[in-house]
Amino acid sequence: MEALAERFVELQLQVNATTVPGLPPLVPRLRTEITASIADEALHGELLALLDGLDDGGLGVCHYDLSPDNVLVGPDGWVVIDWITAAAGPSAADLARTLVMWGRVSAEPIVTFLRGVRRIGAARRGLGDVVLDDWVRVVAAARLGEGFEGEEAAWLRQVADGGLRLFA
Image (cartoon, rainbow, N blue to C red; front, side, top):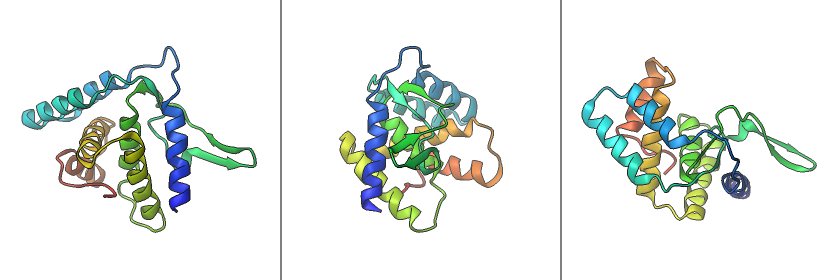
């Protein structure tokens, strides 16, 4: 799992190191989604302030749905598919989105793989746990804007509130 996690992180970093003119910027999108999904004024303000502080101005390609489901493995290497959510933004946001998208998974060996992705991905980006956890909170809050209800919405809200750490 460690070797696969390392290879996955390397692939994501290659994507993030690429720039493509004309991609929509991710940070304004996150701001809009948080504003639409978080009614609690205190939490809303806290998350927007976090986003402002986290934004490093990076405009590399963020796949923003990179997961094992969106990577094809073939004889010529790994190929990323499903680019519908791609945007230009900070690399850390892309890592956080991967963790949020898979955050409710509890089956092995996926959990071990994602713990490796978190650890290696954070280290390769120079991110401490607090900064990565803050990005996860911001991304979870923005994901609430996608219209989830019930258990999924409650779980996302708990992550956005800072009540859950993913794959730590």
